[in-house]
Length: 204
View 1: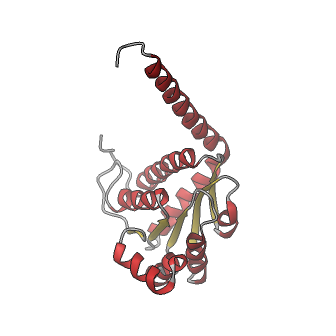
View 2: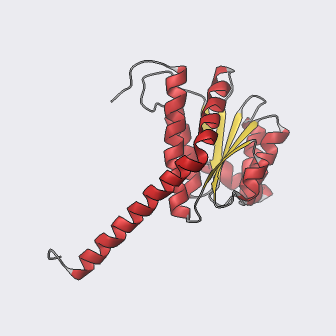
View 3: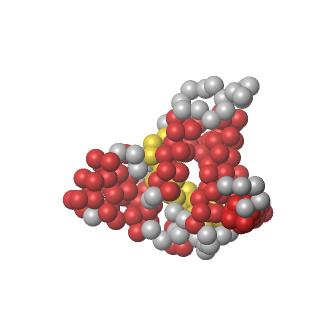
């Protein structure tokens, strides 16, 4: 495509607009959610210090975010340190399809929380809308089992924000922008957890 082509200029304009919108959502999240993010990070630290685990779940892109969180905690984020007990309930396709087939898709996370969750664990429920039935059922199952609950959501928080013990609600109505902010929040949580539990040099 030749330099200065009108189509390329229009695409470049759209790219800049999209990145600007993402950056503004990040700034709005910082303004609205910094205390909640700090509180959530301390809850994660307390969970690990007391011998608890993290169970994370969500649908679609939020399922990928749940796996991202679990991978950063069980593996490493920026520091060499022991692995932390974190499990993404979205990662086992046999679990999800068996439970979905036998009990219905709305039960997949609730059933897995019942199987793996224990009092002292922390359930991290991720939903951009805050109204996904299977995510809500997973949080209800977590509460029944004595787990603490953390929600990452967006828009007005939906039912999820009210149901969870603690909610981080990204102030956006655009799914992509909410997901981008969720990744930033996940990285911040991992950074704080590592620095609190394993003070020392970062891996660069």
